[in-house]
Length: 130
Image (cartoon, rainbow, N blue to C red; front, side):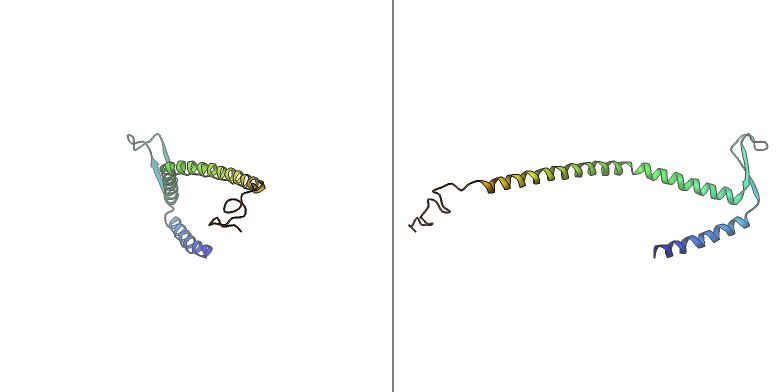
């Protein structure tokens, strides 16, 4: 399904881009010198479609950088939470190991002699002799 949706978007977009490129093949001069328009010190001559594609790609790149820097706080919080979760898992594993060791040690302890479930051997809950 994902490949179908990608093809559904990419193929028409590619056709539009190719049509635009064929229709706008004339050259334009891009100047970055605001003071001298007749003979600019830095000017680039390129096809119009190439200029628009480069500007669009540059806009996508700058927008991606802005979003990436804007999410810096969330990435930092995610790293911190990940470190805390790892520490908690390690501590939990240590506590489980200690509990298992304590449980196995308490199972090995002998039952004190002369004391039954309800007190001294030979008597029930109401202290009656058995």
